[in-house]
Figure (cartoon, rainbow, N blue to C red):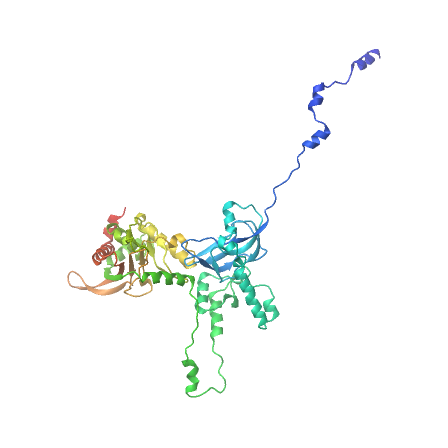
Length: 483
């Protein structure tokens, strides 16, 4: 018992050093050190999304279709709409996260570069580069009505329709400008233009209400069907009096036609001269047949890749035909020739939108198979209306294979950025005399050259054409020049 009491007397609580009490803060001090958590404020502002400059001097585009509608939520890189310029169709994508508040254009409207396409309630941070897409130009910023002209015009149109006695359901109901109200391929849109049909009047039978060619033809046939004859048809000459009258209607040029109108009008200032020749295709036909029926590596080659390569090889000896003329508005400054090293051969293509001329870049470094593959790519994009501005610009000389449709001779027209163009006629089999004066069959094709007579003389053009003819008639010479 005594030992236990002694031990109990020795156990004392530890004494903390005084400096420890000074280092540990009090409860009040700890509370003052706590910093509340807070996040950055959400960037929420409604701003107009401007149509950016597409390049190539394009000032306006046509709205093909919208992929969004008011109150639709979008994220960065979501598709907003598809537009058709003078050269190609392009999809416009969003640069911001947010909610669409307003569309300034309907499908088929013409949109001006630098003007608002839509209003977006932006809910993400805006970089200085993206800020330019929401800031109208200085001359437009002071005019509040300029950004709203398309929308105000639509309201005015609806107001006039209401005053004319239109039913309330047709004017006060929701707009038929939703995501699927005007879906159609570029080929169908070309047909709509041709037949002067409003896509909004056609009931689409395709997927998601997409308008098909059959829908357009059916609508046009019903619209243009003659009224049923009455039981008592008029007799004599008066029965035909209505049919003898000329009926006219006015339609607008498509974007491709508008661009062609401008380019061909400028081409009128170029003095053309024509040079034509006949080319024998027998040797090239035999070579194509061997390549296309090869037992282990069959190819699918047409005449065109060989002809394009022959033109490029000839340009190495006649670089003048790959140049362009540069003139100045200043009369005291003489015109100049711009010599170009790379051979970018343009190929005229017939599409649903009209004539398009994409080009094969740097043909000098490409093989026959490379040229054939690039031709297939461009033709596929041209049919779907997806050629890019890069595909459609930079051509140095053009080849137009009009013979794929028909015709023997053609007088092709030069554009201002080139000094020569080759038109190819239809291949045909004709009787000819051989070296022993025997009549034999031969496959003949006609080449028609046009050149700018301001800088290209007839002798130079004839020598260039003769060199191309030699390469096509003797493919072995062309193969010997390949690198």
